[in-house]
Image (cartoon, rainbow, N blue to C red):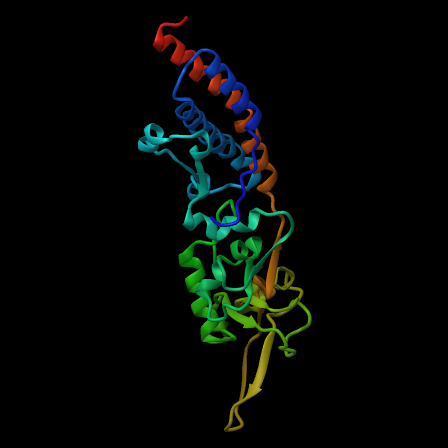
Length: 301
């Protein structure tokens, strides 16, 4: 993952350990530094992994396993100078696609189409932010605890949105219909009122018989205070037809908010810095352990 800095200061620990190694005539100090630095990298990864559940809500396995380190055992025996010592800590390429917005020195801007559920929709120029409560209410989606919308739900909603607005009046007098899906785009003034709060993917409510769909009406009919509401219209031949009145069973509900960009706080950066520093603080002890090990090996203790 590019642009992810590791800022640790181990110079003092290295200088002090080098003096001790030289005082006892112990060689292979560069190897000791390399071994200790590798331990610091492993410790940093473990420290950050422990923080992950506190950074993101319900992180999935891919996010929990995003951070890795590199251990080069061959280089451990080849390192010739202290300046050659190195250790790598990195975020894997796949996870960096979405985690990169959690790192940085300030707000991170995510453009449309870069990553996210909008990949399933025709318009990928805008960010699609799911409204979990409405997805569950309409039964059109079952977001995970983290808020992620399952791919199968996103594909189905995208296909319904691509098909366009459907009033769902066919068979409406026979009982409950089903939720439909349509999109309101920026600049579309035809529905910028009432339950429509701006550009996005919306669910159109089912149409049902008024006597069934409205509890107040159904209760009054059952009590005998009113008759079932009806609607009368004339056919082309002039014949008058009366049918049960059909109404919306609910209100339109936004499933995905559409916006040109989204801003994220770099919520992972503080934990990243803490993990790196805590790991760096172990460098002196690791070098001391290496010195003790070498002394034991040489029989000088």
